[in-house]
Amino acid sequence: MTVKVDGEKKAHAFNWKKLVIIGAVVIVALIIIFNCFVVVDAGHTGVVVTMGSVNEGVLQEGIHAKLPFIQNVIKIDNRIQKLEVNTEAFSKDLQSVDTVLAINYRVDTAKSYSIYKNIGADYESVLVTPAVNEVLKAITSQYTAEQSVTNRTLISDGLVKGLNEKLNDLGLYVTDVNIIDFDFSDAFITAIEEKQIAQQQLLKAETEKQTAITNAQAAAEAAKIKAAGDAEANKKLNESLTDKVIENKKIEKWNGQLPKVSGSGGTIIDIGGIDDTDSKAQ
Image (cartoon, rainbow, N blue to C red):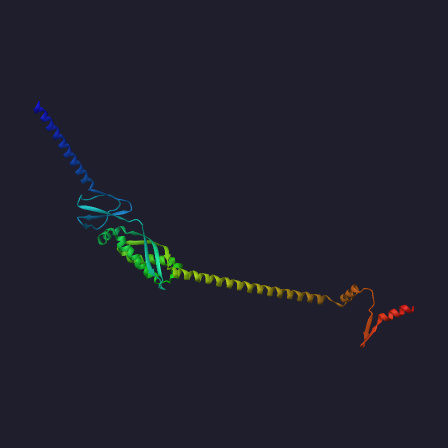
């Protein structure tokens, strides 16, 4: 009985060891199999690194085979990426301009391997951000601080052009630059506000002046038109006053009484007195 029990224990222990070994082999085999393949996500390219050496060319989207434990695949994002940069520059009139920029850029798929080989995965901080600072300083130095505010579009276009000139050969393409904010010193902002107030007051005074001139011109034109109308009316009235019309007007206005005085040769005779004497004599 003792020999039989010991044999069963040894057989049971052997079976467990066998299962553990088989399980370990399966796990190792799965690890090896999984390391034989890599999946490159949509919008990415894969840079193959073989024992520390970067292979030329890239893997496109999809599943690819590779040498397990010998090759490694670095995934580079080739979609549009957004970078926000806070930087300080000086304007043409030596005003300090704090600028916040939003830059949209992408990595050229064909040059993903060269970017990783020559620069590494941190190409944004190594290449893009310094280029933004350099180009912005060159552009803002061409405008005064006030012009920078009114020429945002020109500055944005200049940034896109300047950044592409510096980065395209390296495989980076800037698609858009948005100026989120311009911030100036308190003294400059106060000066701008005072200038705007002065311009508004000058515009108001000029408007009031033009209004007064317009009103005076309108009044003079109205008086001129009225005078011309009166002159035309008097002319027509004079033309209409014939001798017959004048006599008719005299008759219409006569009250039936004869004139009481008459004069001739410098002598004035009171006809009314004579009429009264004749009446008394009768």
